[in-house]
Length: 87
Image (cartoon, rainbow, N blue to C red; front, top):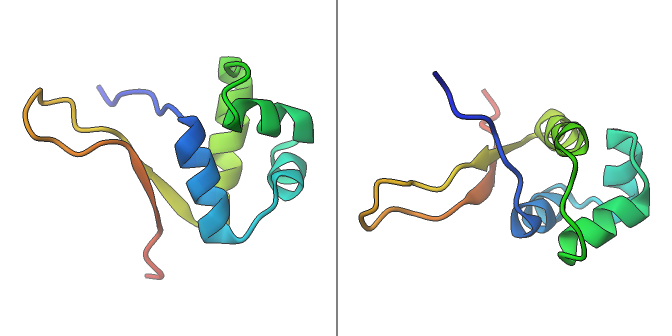
């Protein structure tokens, strides 16, 4: 069973940077307020699961892929973000 996707504040900031989106643009595309994006990215508060899903969907529709951390308890990589392949 695949794990549910989670969004970390640093991933959100990085994804916006890759897409050249402002906090306001992400908020508009996700249907949330800009203050929600701002407060999440600055770690003032956590997101409700439904809001997190809206942000993930908007970022993925914009062309980024969220990379989950490798939890093999070894020398795995941390969470990240990258542009999706143009294929």
